[in-house]
Image (cartoon, rainbow, N blue to C red; front, side):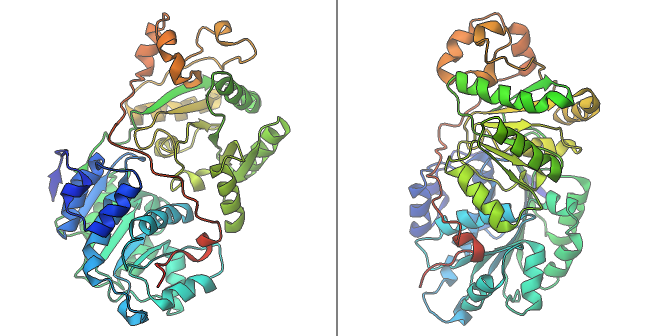
Length: 457
């Protein structure tokens, strides 16, 4: 097992992508790859198995989607015959939201090619997906359960798959997908290229890699189990019964400082998720809840409202902790700490993406101090504790009115204050990547999600 550690300064043009793919990449506003992309893409294009780990928000999806498209492009066909469009590459993801995110990227990058892409996941009717699969698809993104449904119905055939990608493999193992993965992998030719991407390289992930990857190149581009450096974190110690009011204060404080009130608020239970969203609505904050009890249609409608700005707060359980790719998400609030410390890293990874700055705020009561200690141990750092801001009193009323509630324009003035102790504890250095430019927000209609995507004939 070889390891790749050196970062390069390649541009997308220098990596060697075909003109149609490169044109689509540049159209999204990207010119230089992120570290995980620069290190993984050449190996994937060479046909090597790759085991990659990177922080969320570092461009992991494009790190495998782009070279996959490049590798199967020579086999693309403009023929209308389904036989000319077998499934050549399969991406497996643990959640519907992540599957949709990967498919959205694949659709954008394949738009100038004849490669057909589609996404299939549960929670929606199979008929539209079945029609797409029967018409032929080269790149398929799927959740394991729904893919097995299509295999059972004989609408998906994996006998010509040349590239298999396991995305967020650690999450798939956590969610109990190993038997499904083993069944699916057993239907794919043994002579294939296998890519495994994960947020962490746990012993279980390493065992999975040993079973299914051949002499993989191992790539780790960031500190394991760490949040991106662009995420500024703060802890507010708050009694459980006052957490809803604390969320309102935090959001109002951000508004007072000229920041967006948009935020994702994470809870641990479906009931708590719904109750908090309703409570925020009664407080005058436009909020919606997304959790496992919501139908896929409801979840997509709520997510669309949040993305287009007609909703301020998305309250979510961990079903949405991975796979939500919302451009310029300014803030994540943990209404409750997750029971698994690694899930904290994944939650706050929804902000500070693609080089942008983001704020992660956690509301912690006395019963959660053990969970907080586990998080700090995992991240190997002490997180700063601060009082909940008092927006009614203004910045001057709170000596700890600091980074997560300050606009960028006010930063220089606030930095002059005597906050040495807070700064040393926070370790709030901002490391932005000027080569990364966020692409335009997706205008994909909700209806397009029901049956996936396909390159028009």
